[in-house]
Length: 264
View 1: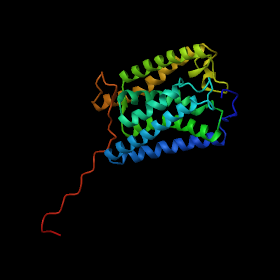
View 2: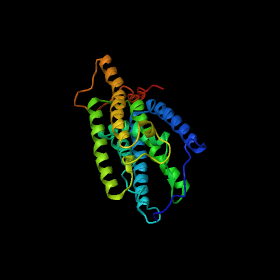
View 3: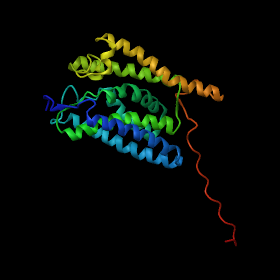
View 4: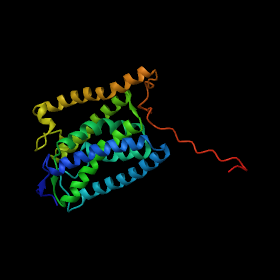
């Protein structure tokens, strides 16, 4: 039922710091494991994990629409993280280029804001809501890191443009939802109640313009090193490519040759 929250997550409390450490360790360990594993096994485990995360995400979105959990400010799937919690599993299951592109750019910038400065209200059951928040936002950090530094996918300028266009399109959807409900999805109508990175960008609506420019610059910096690296190797991505496969995927290990007949 729509009502006041039970409480709020304390930024940089013990739980928050613990999760940040866990995400950093998981990112490093998984990148190392993926680089050293058979590609077929990696793809298989990515698909399995992706299906589990997708099922969890759909069930959580459904939970938010139930009478006991419904809150107009939180339950509609209009935050960028709500879209990302569906797109990231799709990237894991299919390795579709568009899904990898959005996971990379959204996951390590827009989503990262919610990781570093969480704005979380608890409404029904604190342990479940805490876990679901960090499953959604944690996979938005760890999965893009694994896809890029583990599997070796590389961003391109066309992918950069696609991600920016998708960001603007989702902003239009969220703005429309906010206009109809009076909510603040995407933090497009006001800054979060608690401290956030948006506080550094000025008052509303100024911070929207500053954020749009900042995103364009930061995403360009997230693309440029890969483009320059390709140029140095003499193997640039095609101009029309959304994403390029990289050098980190290990080749399948050859099976040992069978012993010749009659020899021990």
